[in-house]
Length: 171
Image 1 (cartoon, rainbow, N blue to C red):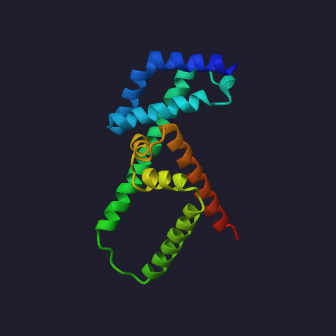
Image 2: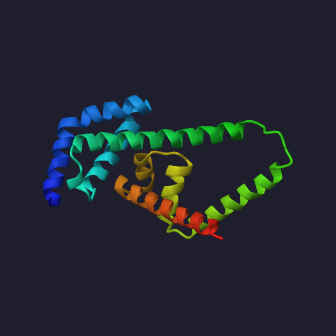
């Protein structure tokens, strides 16, 4: 299947199912703007998929991708919320606490080094989106970039940090 035919299929999907897709995701996330972002990312993934011939129902695949992206977003929210709660509560000092704190500090310092290895725009997009939790649209406006470029920078930063962590875990 050629890219233009596939793009036409995705365009048809958008016209026919966009409102239903956003409503589907909004029910899971409870946020219309998050639902629109997830829907946009789902369309992008369907548009750039390499195994189009293997998918029987492009609509079903689109909704599956969007559902999985919504789950990922909910997991990120939970991690951020748990971190905020942990920061706001005083934890009792135990014997293991200094070791745990030292390991965490070392990991944070290492990730900071990894982020400094990145181009400034890539690092900034990562910090604004992943660390501060801003949505792609807000980051794009503050950096005067397109949302697509912000997604590109964040993906590159995530890959770089993952490679750094993987390298540190190997003996």
